[in-house]
Image 1 (cartoon, one colour):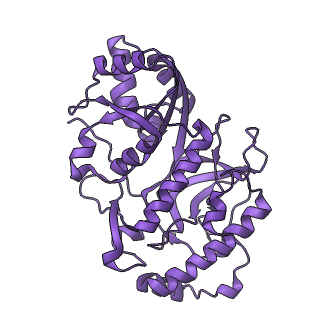
Image 2: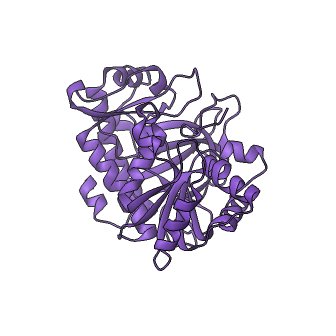
Image 3: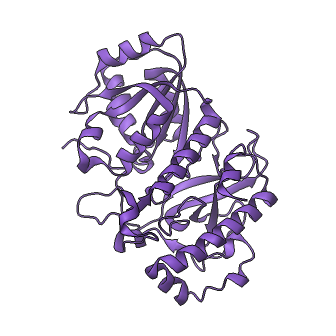
Length: 358
């Protein structure tokens, strides 16, 4: 199955058997392609004694740790074809991942993100309230995972409005005007989890203010570690968001700059879902074998999108467990899973370049 054929399908339509074959074929082709085009990747696979003929399933394919992108510039196209370089989040003094994208990779990431998100909100572009600061567009030093997310999500909206000023304070009048202007139609909101919590939810609660969204959808990502440190889980986060913003349907999603576009969205039943374009494999830390359904382990993410760099099979530093396959009550096919958070002693990352007041 070609990438175009993937795009012609509902992004959650392939059952386990059909998806396994389609993904295995595509990911094996990508592995061989990057093996030929990226010298550093070739050295890694040679050390692993990679033999294409022995690959029987997606879980047999060789993966690389996400941290390699912090130490090496891995790309499979000529430098002159790179149109965008993304950097991962990180706190001061840490190395960041560099992800090199050519025009084709950017196009496919945008197309995939559009297919996935549209399956939740529909094809129409909605009025968009960005729970961030417009400075993100003007300050190029902030353009990394966070900036890419903001700009990438803007394709789903119109009349984009930023809720925070350059000092990260809520512009109450602007937000009130936004909700009043679009009180008769659905609106879309996007932001980073911890920033929404720190600069929207808690501030509004402290001031005793609340907005009155009538029909809103919020997508948010990242920053759960800091919320869990405050004993805030997903249910509490959703409840408090709705308490200050109004009638909001909240969708959390999981993704990383190393595989931008292949996002895993949480459904109405609280399950993270793999789309047709991506997969997760849970691996036991002791030997990296594939864990059973319900067994906790390291999350490996797989995606058919990375063609300009060898990021199609990446072992993350997050823990999770596959909860089931093809039988989520929401009706979406494929694996659905749970994320427990970062592994102990893993390098601490910023939550998508979260702004922190000092």
